[in-house]
Amino acid sequence: MYNIGIIGYGGFGKFLHNAWNQLGEVRVVAVAEKDAAKMQGLDGVKTYTNWHDMLHDPEVDVVAIVTEPSTHETIATACLEVGKHILIEKPLAVNMADAQKILEIRDQTGMVAGIDFIMRFNPLLEAIRDLTQKGVFGKLRRVDVENYAQDEALLPSHWFWDIGRSGGILVEHAVHFIDLVHFISSAKVLAVNGLKHNRNPGQEDQIMANVLYDDGLIATHYHAFTRPGFFEVTKIKLAYDLADVELHGWIPLSAEVKALVGPATRTSLFEHPLFKMNTLTPIEKASDESRPAGWGPLDSSKDETRKTVRSGGIAYEANEIVQGILSLGKTKQEVYIDCVQASLLDVLAKISDPNHNLTAPLEAGLVSLGIAVTASDSARSYV
Ligand SMILES: NC(=O)c1ccc[n+]([C@@H]2O[C@H](COP(=O)([O-])OP(=O)(O)OC[C@H]3O[C@@H](n4cnc5c(N)ncnc54)[C@H](O)[C@@H]3O)[C@@H](O)[C@H]2O)c1
Image 1 (cartoon, protein in one colour):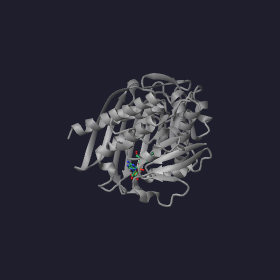
Image 2: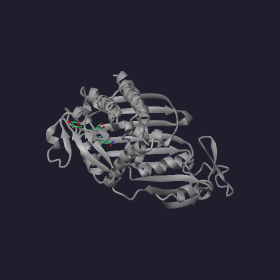
Image 3: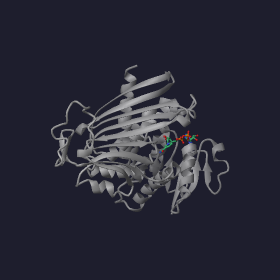
Image 4: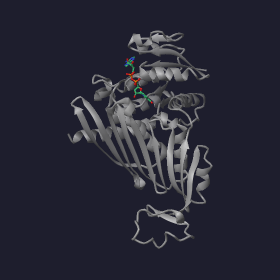
């Protein structure tokens, strides 16, 4: 049984409390929140309006830091220094110096620290990562994130719009998706730039990051906080040499898959517990719409003995096109709760067993923050 303290009891702090209350091996024993009204009605939990006071509570083993991003460094380093383990909300910090300081103090104190990159705990994204790393889809060439988020709950006075407090949209929000690329692929970053638009001087509401990786991978992350909630859209498209995978929603529940498979790869996909096949077509029966009627077929395209396709300049063994879906069969609420529970359990596993490798270590937070900061600086340098 581990005892948890939560610092920051706004929207997400409350969500975490509710999700963690459903875990047997965890008890939320304390909450610190500067706005006392937000803690009213909390039963069986110690409450503090000054988070420093929670740090002296011997009952608290792990502190979840769920305050606005600019406060993360001060709170995280103080927790580590008094001997508390931490689970820190994304982003790690709003600048690299603060983020590096947190890693430095973690290393000096030897305490366990994880970052709440919940996507790393979504079984659908774990499946895509595993299929990618097994080479089932060929090389990953493109990640395209398009996110039209709601701003109805974000009044112009909200800390989210204050770049000093949130870091801006790429730092506060896009880090989840930037990290997802690193979770799926081990490609190395070569170059980063960005573009943005301000609705008014105080609201940078559209921004994008372009990231060039080695091995022919290019990622773009477009985020706009502009829409009503009911019209919110998030699409994540992954283009591989042998597959197009499209995910919907920022907590994706399913992915549409169109893939070229061969004898060496078909089993990994077809037997994956999340996969349901819709169609399977031998490639010699597939129509080639890149060459409309009148161009004549490619010499090789109707060759019934054809066993390889060239994609990205590589000859892959593939003889069938499959269309299907990877699906969790759960609601967004259920998956979100599963993810935040798994994220905490990952930190607890590391506390119990120092040899446990964290799924979401602070290093992941540092890498995605570095990209978000560089792209934001680049975007802001144009205007
Ligand atoms: N991992 C995820 O899926 C996810 C989802 C939502 C939010 N978040 C992150 O969680 C953090 C909080 O976001 P939120 O949406 O809950 O914001 P919020 O504004 O609703 O809540 C933050 C709370 O922290 C309190 N607070 C701020 N400074 C404090 C201090 N010094 N001492 C005590 N309390 C303090 C505020 O009063 C507020 O109640 C952010 O870093 C955000 O990026 C993560």
